[in-house]
Length: 464
Image 1 (cartoon, rainbow, N blue to C red):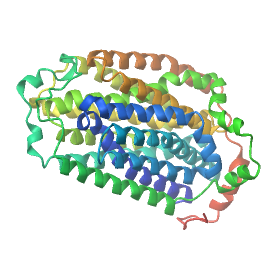
Image 2: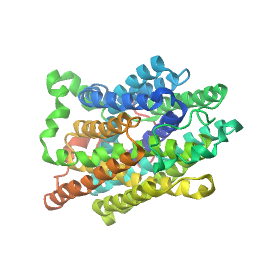
Image 3: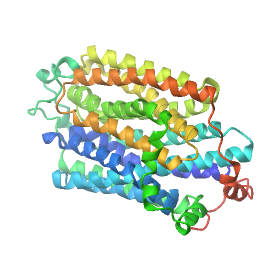
């Protein structure tokens, strides 16, 4: 039998699965599909710059006024707008929709994290378990379902673009520039790897728009509004605007949050490298753009399975063990990518790197999200807004220098941030081990607890 909390976790996960089937597929293709004047990468940089701005003030304001559920729906609508912008990609369509997506991105993710944290704590109270253990499991389930979006979104792109046989024509002289052997800033404009037929692009983007709208429908209809009473009380007893506006910055007084900044930024660096640099300078350069989807499917499958596995294992191994496993995997991949010279004859190798990267990313995502939920249970909105802000800063920096710095130096930068993360993260973990953060007061979720105790199975949607 499934509890209401578990049902809600599944609804959130399926909604994000559908939404990021579209956005994840588009993000993987931007550096190759809209390569002209670096337009695709520039749009990604604008997205994450906008997320930084929105992280500064929007999440607490929207979540406290709208509640987690309707903040998620509004954020999803912003993501769908970016798909519309890709129907006729240009500076005047991609940049405005990138700004809209970015403004909705931080509230969307902060609301999701807050929703899972509330559900996990409520279920822990009900079952008499530690809140951190249930939160870890819920984030593991979420990322298991969510990360599989990379499989479906990229499968769609590979099957649709694979109909254009001309994009597989890779000249031998271009192969000499793939990987870190050359600077990696330019892929020969004379090759046919730049862009598939426009009709196929429209077909793919149309499919992405459809699944994005489906995501909004799933959440709006099936997700329970579990913090409805809290938002009503907030609107009736409204805090001063500046108090809510500055909530994200006030949390920066906590030294633990400051110490976690390298870890959080590294999450943005490593994700942007795979979707922006690996897909362009290794996969598209040596195999063709139609292989980007298949390679990212491997990443998504590995990420999805490992997210579920590590969400379960964390209570036995601890977070630190998993974080160091992820660091070791990324370190090995970075060193190997510095020396590997990609060639079509080495096809299996192209899938080894995203598989290992997916395993590591599963740990970075599940455990970092859970860590923020455990360390800052009373400031969830501000904590997860900070998470998105610093992770997005990693994305912005990586995408910003993408067209200016040679691939070799990008790998060195990635390695340096990883080393800094390995140095700073254990400080917070050691402090938490010696001085555990007190669990959330039981009274915080008493109303939701009373609601969930009325059923031991899936029930219908509550009143909206």
